Length: 184
Image (cartoon, rainbow, N blue to C red; front, side, top):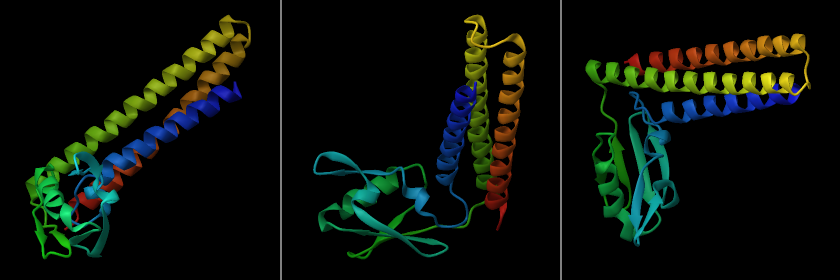
């Protein structure tokens, strides 16, 4: 039974990590390296992640600086940034590509909060799926006579406690992200 509970925690940790990764891509009023994480650039015929072609830094709270290692990739990086759904315009001086992060409008902030809520709901669905999987495993163990009826019920209660703690963790993460998005 301990193995089932450990697997349950491990899978739920992965769901939380996935939520963190999704929320990092949401644009708040501040510059963040996470904003350009998902961008891929065509480089000699291959789609390559931006962070493998350039160093990315945050010189101030409203700017992302991208310094490509190969001069031939400047235009490709600019095109990839403009094609992305971030709505940002890169400015190049031949050495560094700068992306200025404009302040968010109230409407855009509300849209971002909706997206954050959707991501958190997806994470909760993933947590519930893990819970169902763990409970099914416990039932199967009882049917195979590896657990008694009482042990199975105790296991179900433990799985529910774990699920509740992870759901509250998702709610805290969402509340923090909402606060960050709505900050001016």
